[in-house]
Image 1 (cartoon, helix red, strand yellow):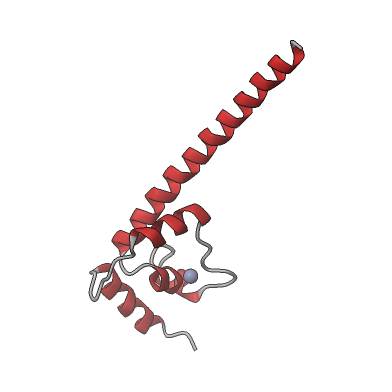
Image 2 (cartoon, rainbow, N blue to C red):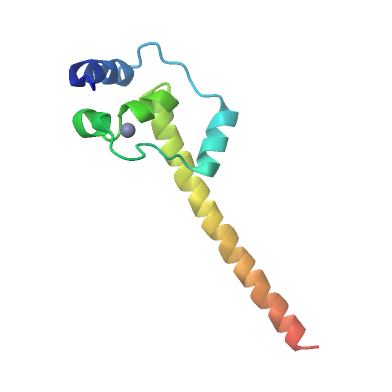
Length: 102
Ligand SMILES: [Zn+2]
């Protein structure tokens, strides 16, 4: 059974960075690229303890700092991805133009 009090206690410890390690940059880059899926289905920890510090997130990220870093990295990666797609679309347009000229 889900123990709300225990989970909140663990969340507070996590928030305070007790026993915090850090993710190595390789793992962080991989996570940012793939994007994380947590709380698949019902997550009591999310409901009672908080969406930004539920047990799924705490399992992956050693500290809130790592989680915030991941969010920022993910955000940046998605922007780069959009820029990449835009650049690709533009270059395809260019190719089409040159092909038309043949
Ligand atoms: Zn969760």
